[in-house]
Amino acid sequence: MTIRGAAYVAGIYEHPRREIPDRTIFEIHTEVALGALADAGLTMADVDAVFCDSTTGMGPFSLVTHWGLQPKYFDNTETGGSSYLAHVGHAAAAIAAGKCSVALVTLAGKPRSGAGVERMSFMPGPETGFESAWGVSGAPHSYALAAQRHMHEFGTTAEQLAEIKVAASIHAQHNPNALLPFAVTIEDVINSPMVADPLHRLDCCVVTDGGGALVIVSPEVARSLGRTNAKILGHGEAIKHTDNGRIDLTYTGAVWSGPRA
View 1 (cartoon, one colour):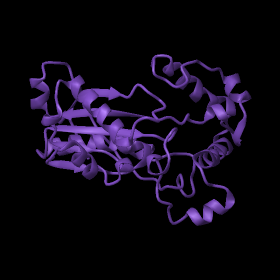
View 2: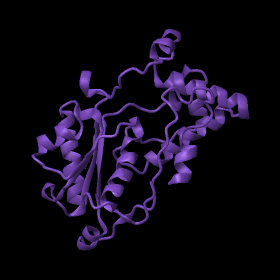
View 3: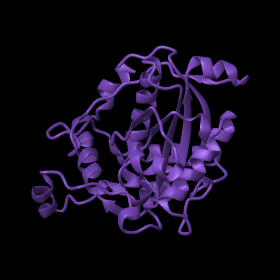
View 4: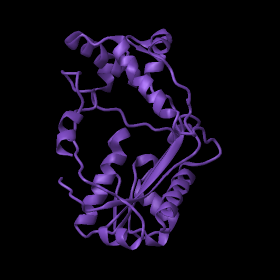
């Protein structure tokens, strides 16, 4: 997929809370959708395309019914944590093809406080029965395998891996709603408890509730809003299997999707 100036990001909104036990998934989707539309100077009545993942059950089917919409276009491509990046690209492509002009992309999840269908989860793949017997049952274990292999192949150190968390903690200080707004050092990461060798607790992502939304519009709509919008310059996608790459664990699908974008 090649996109050059076909669409613009006109509105964006991030849910301010990181633990939301008093909201349903649908309420979080709705709050962030309204926030992004307000940021763009638009309303639900302007939306003619909806993009979301499977956290709502039947994806856009459930959301548009909840919102009382009749969109021209919808998409619930599920690629895990990168779903919303794919949705932005798909929305831009749909706009370029004349399928819609105001696309709403929403994210919502309650992995911290939710239970059952409100937790982000996926059906087990065909390899799960073989891997789970040996303890590969969660993200830290899978990423630990990748980290160990990267260390073996390239001499990567635990201190170098820790720099990722240090950078993330510095970025978090610029977000007043960050769950962990304080900076950490390489020593803090290395000295935190080991979760799955070589990954320490501070190497691992925090688990939070939350949500966000984007409004993607056509050039014509962007011009009518009378504000500065962000042009979408490119988009790329690639698949590298659910088990982190089968054989070579040292790189992700970004080696293909990055150049495409």
